[in-house]
Length: 145
Image (cartoon, rainbow, N blue to C red; front, side):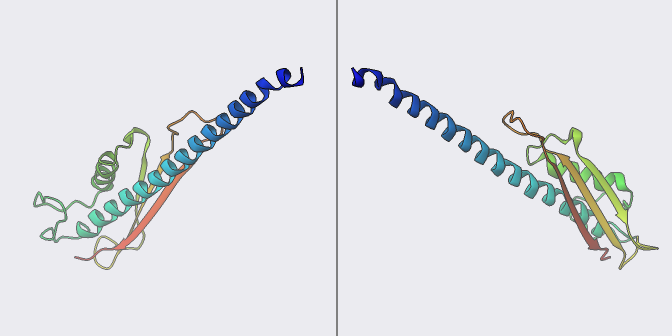
């Protein structure tokens, strides 16, 4: 009689343990995706700084990307490079915020300092019940040419 009442206990323990294990695996995968997104956001910010560093002054002969022959010092061109770098990493670029700051007076000429900040509101692959973080990456560089 006692044995008959305990047959469902093992099945219940197995179900609860498997449910917890699957939840922990999903959380671990989501944390890995968050770190991956941070690395890619930082990479996109660095690409924007590279572009701004090369295109900062009147010399456009050392372009990292195909040159149009004209100098682009406007923030829209840097933002386009950042969005393109983020797009190549399979991110949804519609909600990425890119800000470009030339930090010193006369900073469009060497050795001016340029700063690119990328803000990406992270969206979890799984619909987890907690608040989603916002990823922010900043890169700085000196204009070289």
